[in-house]
Length: 331
Figure 1 (cartoon, rainbow, N blue to C red):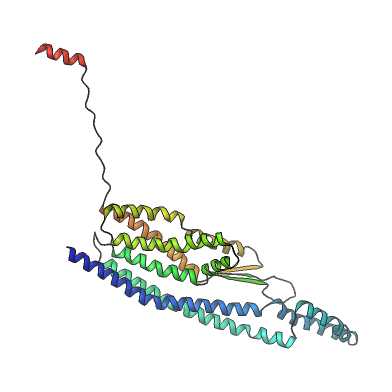
Figure 2: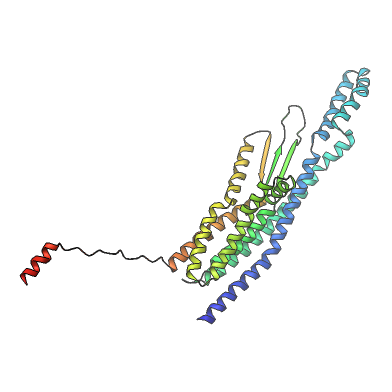
């Protein structure tokens, strides 16, 4: 029996290590291509700015003035245009038009990186489902290989969810008669937000996000694996209750809700746009996996080791003293 348990333990750990090694490749590629996608989007937004579009619009305005005022138009332009261009940092029309023409290429590169990230995501999903299916097919009433697999898969999804871009916010004013341009934008990932908080000396908020959104989820996964490998019943019950309690302190679900609310709130304004990226979906998947794993683990432990129910202590009925006296008299 002991040899069988040891073989099961080594087989479980071996499968988990094999999965982590194989899943590390698509996870790295997803993060890489998702960040490249965000970088090309950043270049497109940087180019499609007020200055470049302003230069094109300014050229149209001066062309119209020169057409109406053949003599005064060029004179007014020579006096006014340099001041305006210097004040608003407007480039020449030639440079501005060349930059704007290159935006389409950035969007093509962005789509290519997005397609690559989705292809690697499909590969990671198939690998994870295969790993889970293998552990699920070999389980019985006492084995918990499928819970071990869920905890391992959740770690990979958490890493991708933290490092990959999660959300893009964009401000694009809708001005009649003016070309479409990007006034401001923000490309956000969970790791990026935490890093910016540290860089801006917001230590308290940064530490809280680090602990509740990264360290506690990793601790939950580690303790889940530890419980599955532990032989001590009291230890299993204590750690299971502890996992259930710290789930309330995890900010993973809070972050997901905050991102969703921000997405819908921003979209209510016609001048702003919000798009969810790969990191958000992986972080959401981690939250669901973590919730399912913790619930199944607690149910499994309670099913295999139900709590003892002590029988109620019944008190003996007290016989009145008068009855005892009468009985003795009869004897």
